[in-house]
Image (cartoon, rainbow, N blue to C red):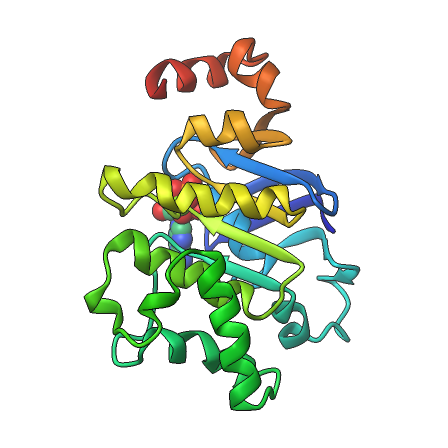
Length: 240
Ligand code: ADP
Ligand code: MG
């Protein structure tokens, strides 16, 4: 579903991604961990082309970065992204936040878009908030709206960039539970998170990044019990 082959990226003189090789199969959950500034967000953002790459090849859902015929808008339709800050439209009701893209981008009629929105709101457990404004919701509820909004586009891949980092501790669990359910349904997911419990429980693979490189890539039972690399060991000592 996603394939990085020797991907390099620079921001001006700064070499942010170095020789990235990473494959994500359909239905896999890959959790990316690593210190702040190691390039995790940049890696995610390359997948849906919020960033360009300098060299190498990145293929997403059989669309190649290097192929100038690749339609970026079509590619993005297949990818949902959830950010640390929920990025909901504050002046739109929850339901209208969710129906916007399906109506505008997929051309769904309003009624159908609303039915889809309600289906996903129910899935994330907040169908009773459909008529509320984002500011009337808790952080955990807003993040669940953001997830429902992503799902309403029926994506093939979901990307999560520290989806619980801005939440009060008591709200982290409700968001992780929604993500766990999604993983169990077979969604292909790449998740950047500091929630090591989630990584341990849900990840098929853990990718550890440091200074723009993938330093280690292992199943969670290996990564957390017996990391191969010294840098991973030091990181785990700090966060666990
Ligand atoms: P992480 O998500 O692991 O914290 P990022 O991918 O956000 O790391 O950033 C990696 C490095 O790239 C950081 O040193 C950051 O300052 C730098 N960086 C990120 N975005 C930009 C940008 N748009 N221009 C220049 N440097 C950037
Ligand atoms: Mg980041």
